[in-house]
Image (cartoon, rainbow, N blue to C red; front, side, top):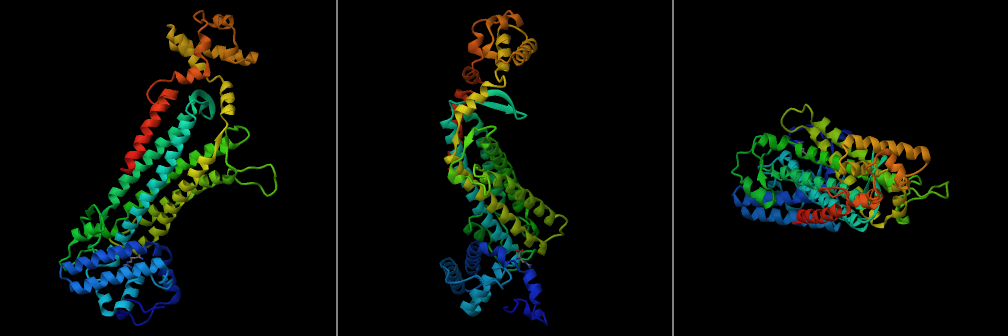
Length: 462
Ligand code: ARG
C-alpha cells in the first residue's frame, strides 16, 4: 500500500481492511479520462493565472497526457490498492514528474474534482444512451413502415378492442422513446454546470479563473455556489430517474414481444440468433432477451431508490456517503445501454405473422364500434346506436357468427336504418383506414406519423 497523502497528520498508516472498505478505485476507475482531462484544464488555468509557473503547468499537462496515453495503450495499469482514481492519477504523475506533480492539486479539492469528473463522464454517457435510443427508435419506425398496410387488433384491458394499422402499434413506442431523448437532453443541460474551483466547499484564496476551466472542458455554465457545487448530486438522480423511465418503456415493449411470441398470440417469430432453447424441452424457443430486459428494469428502479436514499438527510457539503453514487448510476447506465443495444438487432431480425394478426382481428367483434358509428352517421343518437350494436354482438355470440356474417334482414330487425353499405362500413380494412383523425390508427395517419417521427429523430442529432 502506498503511503497516504495525508500521512503528515497521522501517526499510523491506515489499517488494510479500513483501506479496502474506504477505497472506490474499483468503481471510479472508469472515470480516468474525465479525471485527466479535467486536470489538464486545471493545470492550464493555474499556469495562465500565474498561480504556478507556466512552464510547470505545461509539464503537468504533458505528464497528464502521457498518463492518459499509457492507460489507453495498456502500458500503465490502474493500481487496485489506490484509494480512488483521483489519488491514483496524482500519485503516478508525482512519481513521474517529482515536485512538479505535487503542484497540480493547488486550488482544488477532491470534492470539486469528483463532481467535475462525474458530470463530464455522465454527459458522455447521456450522449451514448441518446444515440442508442435513436437507433432503436429508427428500427421501430422501419417496422412501422414495413407493416403500415397490415391490420391488427388494438387492445384495451388486453381484450380485443378496435382495428388498427400494425405500424400504429410500433409508433406508440417511438413516441415514448422520443420523450426519453427529450428528458435526457434536459438532464444533460443541468449536468453541464462546472463545479471545478469550488474546492473543498468554500472556494479558494487563489485568483483562479473558473470560467476558463469550464469553457476548456465544454461545460455550458459555472456552478454559482461553491457549497452546492460539491454537495449536489441531483444530476445523478435525474439521470437515474430518466433511465428508470426508459427501462419502464423497454420493459413494456419486451412484454409485447413475450406475449406475441407465445403460441396463444403467435404474432411474432424471433430470429433464431436472438432466441434460446430449453435444456429439457426440445420444442421450445424462448424470448430470453426480452425477458431479461423486463427483469433488468428492476435494477434501474432499485438504483434510483438507492441514490435517493443515499442523499436523503445529508448535511452540507460533501460527505463520504456520496461515494456510493457511482456504483448505482454506472449500473443504470450500463444496463440501459445493454438493453437498447440488444433490442435493436432483435427487432431487425424478428418477423411478424401478419396472417395470424389479420385472422385474430376477425374474431372479437372489433368492428362493433364502427357498426354503431354507421348508425350514428345515419342520424341515430350514439348511445342508441351503441346499444343496437351491442345487441347484434350478443345475437352473433348466441348464433356463432361474426357481424359480417349477418344477413341484411338480421341487421334490419335490430334497426331499420341498416342498408347494403353496412358490409363495407364494418370491413376491417375499411374500419382501420377510416380512422382518419390526427394521430389515429388508420393507414394515412400512420404514414404521416412515420414522416414526423423521422424528422424528430433527425432533429435530435442536429
Ligand atoms: N472517492 C471519492 C468519491 O467518490 C472522492 C472524493 C473524496 N473526497 C473526500 N473528501 N474524501 O466521492
